[in-house]
Image 1: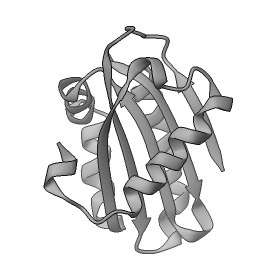
Image 2 (image 1 turned 135 degrees about the vertical axis):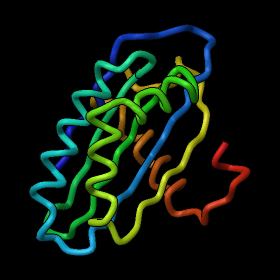
Image 3 (image 1 turned 90 degrees about the horizontal axis):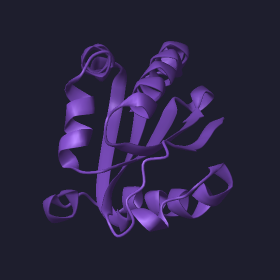
Image 4 (image 1 turned 120 degrees about the vertical axis):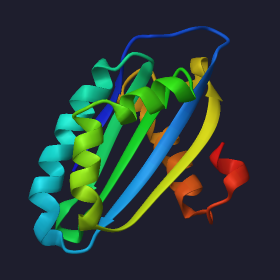
Length: 141
């Protein structure tokens, strides 16, 4: 299942976006329904968050795997969202449910972000490539 890329409409020509991709693997798929409900709640929060440029969610609930893809004006906007409830509280609650969580960050010109759900396939492919790479602190910045 996928909630397609949703652009927030905030665009600055020439500006650079911070893109974040994440993948969560649950310890057991039995937690998937609750995880999915929390994910939808956080997706709605992200769409309204100051500095959000676009968001998307993918899920394979029967496998207990979830992915997020989002773009932000900068690190501070992303971190402000991450600290704000319900995101902060939900992450503390679901952390014990996860076997593995990966986060990857990279920059992209804002003009290159997808404008609609049909244009997001290339960004998802890039996210998959980043998530497949071993973690490197240099790439995380």
